[in-house]
Image 1 (tube, one colour):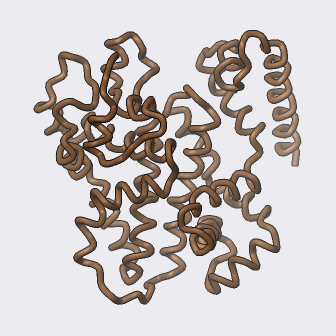
Image 2 (spheres, one colour; image 1 turned 90 degrees about the vertical axis):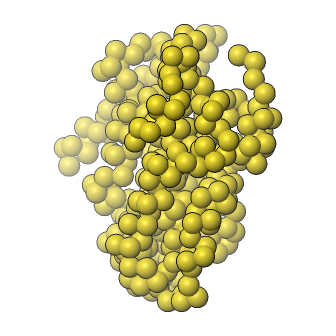
Length: 328
């Protein structure tokens, strides 16, 4: 469809490099069905945005409200994630009357009063689109400017003494782990439905996996962490990950998320195992091998033979690895 992206960008005070991402964030599933493109909607971005928003808020609270107890911090996070607040922000930006794109039979005024509605979902998708387009620091700054700071800045105290530093670090790292994992899967597995991404994410963030991650932490990383965080628990991977996030933040706040994601991916993720789990799940759901080779592994028609070889390499090698782990 023909649309003027500049009108939306002006309303949200943000310019996209890739306006296709903006359009996707504004495409409700009902609209995708109406134009016979059911896979072109904002559901994947919405799920990514949900994880990113949780991290943005906890990151802000960790740095600006260190004197809050953990219970008050998480309660405040829940209030900021309230769907009505997100819906109201969408309308205050002047987006609600025309966006997101909906089925023509949908009545916006009726949808707005529902707890779960297309507006709060599109707000999450928009935050994710900003992140994918320009990076985490931009999505953080945008949401901080439009919702967090207007609500919380006036309540901030000068008291910088941190309450329960170990618990705060753990919740920061736990939220970071969920966001980074989902973000990684979102990028690795294009077109895969949010429900499948969530299942894979749960596996990668499980207690069992966290125990395995701890075994892979290098001596050099422990030295960095224990130097900066003297009370960190060596039995908690989220605390460790939170500490690394703070370390990268001290180095360069603009790249703290990107460097944390890179550190996690390079040190703890076996990508072939992740692909094996994803492909196995897709095959069980009846997705054709040819589609997986083309859309997930990225091999087009002219390279199909190489793609098929890569497909079997992943499935055979990873299956052997899993068998060895089971035996031990």
